[in-house]
Image 1 (tube, protein in one colour):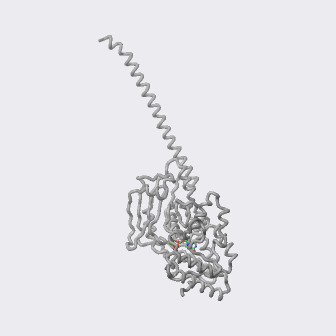
Image 2: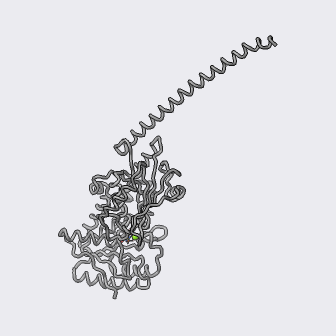
Length: 437
Ligand SMILES: Nc1nc2c(ncn2[C@@H]2O[C@H](COP(=O)(O)OP(=O)(O)O)[C@@H](O)[C@H]2O)c(=O)[nH]1
Ligand SMILES: [Mg+2]
């Protein structure tokens, strides 16, 4: 027995020393590992601060990212302005979402400045900082720690004037599927707050707006958040949420192209024929009436140059689609109406004048196919046409039943012309509508 104990002693000693040695080694390792983690955390935080400084000239960035806007250009232009007003209110940098096919949405392929003039926009909102979507994306990608988010939907009600707030279960899958939101490398998970806010009966009319100071105060409180990125969109809002502003000015490459053409055409009569939602059986009669109206107008004014802006498909590309995305069915009657016009008068359009051919030459070659698609449906030519209509000596819209009478597109032209008339411009009318005989 004694023999066994004495013989075991050195073994036990060695074993204990062995354990002690490994424990010390483990502690040292752990100590350095934790320190390393701390250092890494500090370094990544410092790097994130540097990245923030690079993109938004502040240690912390706070962005408002309107990843999609409802409706086509004349309307989405104004909706976007309402959201800039909110960015101003919250002191957040406004992300300038991509554009394409007459719409503003993060999935689009052209930068915001393809449609809009960012310098002019900055002058209209001197307190707001802006960043293009591609820059915002780079910021998010460069960050070491993913940026946290809050998601907000603004909506309104036909009858309930109360402001209300609801919290939704996060619907990340939908945002990824519909808007490829995973591209942005943001911290968007089940911890993200999803808020739905009703702004009462505000924002229902494209023609009206108001100061809405109580709404501003309410939104300032409700939208107060530390999250670096506020993802925001609106649903069912059809008019300005606050003061109704002049639309966001268009990019100078389009305004220059429009000036070049107006200089060539002047003096000219311009027609806006928004065929969508017109009475189908009246289309040929509407066209005949327009021909009669234009012949008379040419006789009385001596102006024979005519420019036509329309949502009817003009460009030839694979299959002919309307220039308004919501104008889904083109019928024989629409074609007949166009044939009557073309066979009776010499009509200028953006296609016949080749006024937008410059885009093919100046645009990045990788975007050429996209540009063809853009010009074959609703797209930048809608903006171009609008500018030509605004500068026309005479502007003619359609009568009820022959066109979408309450088009906000036509209204935008009318309002810009009213401003020109006030400023003693040389144009001759605000708008006249041809008569249906
Ligand atoms: N090129 C061209 N596009 C038009 C014309 N009229 C309408 N569109 C297209 O149809 C869209 C109409 O939507 P929106 O601008 O919201 O105006 P609204 O629907 O008429 O109130 C425009 O954005 C254009 O893309 C036109 O005269 N010329
Ligand atoms: Mg519309």
